[in-house]
Image (cartoon, rainbow, N blue to C red; front, side, top):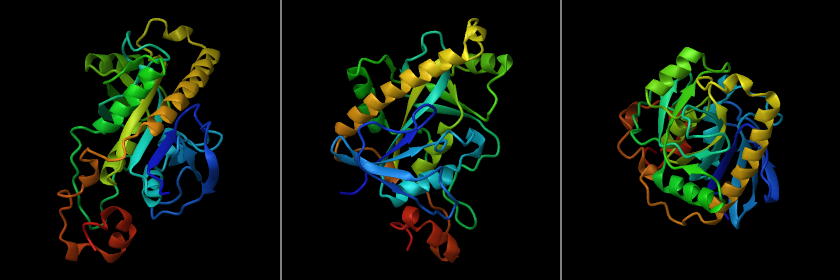
Amino acid sequence: MSIEIGIIGGSGLYDMAGLEDRKDVTLVTPFGAPSGAYVTATLGGKRVAFLPRHGVGHRLMPTELNFRANIYGFKLLGVERILSASAVGSLREDYRPLDIVVPDQFLDRTRGRISTFFGNGLVAHVGFAHPVCGQLGRVVIDAGRAAGATVHDRGTYVCMEGPQFSTLAESTLYRSWGADIIGMTNLQEAKLAREAEICYTTIALVTDYDCWHPDHDSVSVEMIIHNLTENAATAQTIITAAVEHMPAARTCSCGQALATAIITRPDHIPAQVKQDLQPIIGKYIS
């Protein structure tokens, strides 16, 4: 049985309950090492691959993550869909701690992160107006509501650089822009998944209000840890249900993202680049 579903665990979600027939798979990529070994297993009757984003023991900061290696590794495993869980802060009063948000847009406030597989003699421009997979997002929304969670089915995720949190001026600015939640990791994953023609959606788990909120300074470490733990349990329930109810066929356009995106003439692409990106571009360029 091929592995079709990838799961990325964020802060607080370093493993998945219910994984059967587990096997650790260590992969080497042209872009270096992923965050750790992928746990391949059976969940809800389907084969999945689980990767803790920040490594075992949460050793990697957002700025240290090798996003290319992580997504490339899923591609090597044959993954066609990625469910990504992450902790976020809320920029809205009505997006409360312990709520779930399935964002449909991103704002990039990172600096200098590598967000593409392309370059070095190969140019491609994928469409990114709608940065997450609508079909996959619907599955997650339905699973979340069935689990009794408060789920917001849209939102704009500000991806900031970190590792420090926002200043009050920044937080206030993002609110004035109409942004809804803030985190440090998901935009690069979404961009790279689109280039790899993998469906991607985010299960954004609200831990607390960002610093714009008048009660922000009263938030304690104990409260954050409690919310992370509760969110992790909710995420596992949602992910398990989403995997169980995943449609067999992809009806979205994610699987054809590169069909008209590659600009460079095939005879001008360096041989090493062709070799390195074969799992991604192989069906278009031999």
